Length: 346
Image (tube, rainbow, N blue to C red; front, side, top):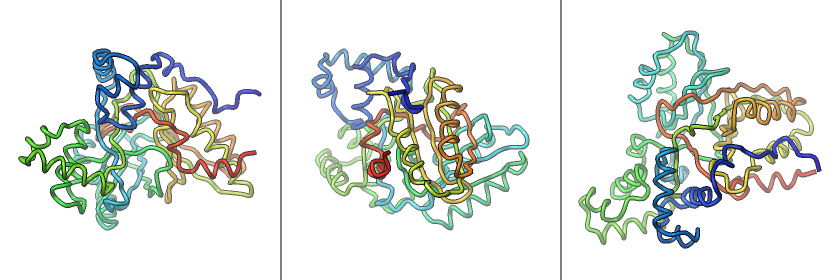
């Protein structure tokens, strides 16, 4: 059978041996897993685990964090904003403007069809609307062309949240303070939490287990800095669905679910349907720009040609605010539309 466009090997992932890739995968699934358990599962010594962790931490800037259950904590108005500037902005100034509010969670400078991506989330639709208009006014000095879309749901991936937003969520203070600590370091020991919060060790253990039972935290996981030898490509798309659209969507889902076995970094870090200026968003990791353009952008243009698809894309240059959702996951089990894909397989 001929290789389909979405089935291709990543040279980036092949640079790292299987043990290292499995190590990162296990931390992505549970960032609190002990060194002893990592050692047993991988069949290597604790010292080797420790040394490999140090090496990966240094190269990728791994951060141990949490993925919150956004529905349970009543997170409101998640939006993705794409901005094109008429004149080159002072990104230090833009960053300061974004930091002044709790609403922007991630801001990425890009090059391509647009210059800036912002993931924003608020405690109410009213708060988001106020921030949206305020930021448009503040950025007009750079001729900002601003397009905002509401995130329907995350089909794949997540965006880490800033503590400035978590502080405003409707969570009991004793749990909120613990969540904020774990958001900064998901491997924080009970002793560290006890010392930091001035809480008895046994109380910390009790509250931690209660927190897990309440399902506020979906997963202890990891994020990384922008990888040194990979291209991160994003795209926003707009469709005019025509007859047969669902069958074509199934092909696209196959692309999102296809990945190298035990990839160090999963190919697609985020896939999300949108409502507003655009209909869909992806953020993916590729070997280089040409691979990203041919295997991602052009592939999806070809799939949805009958649906009058319009794609605007941007290559990630640097993170201005927040953390990139770079991690290694089992895409097939993670992707929550896999049943739909099976329904429309040819």
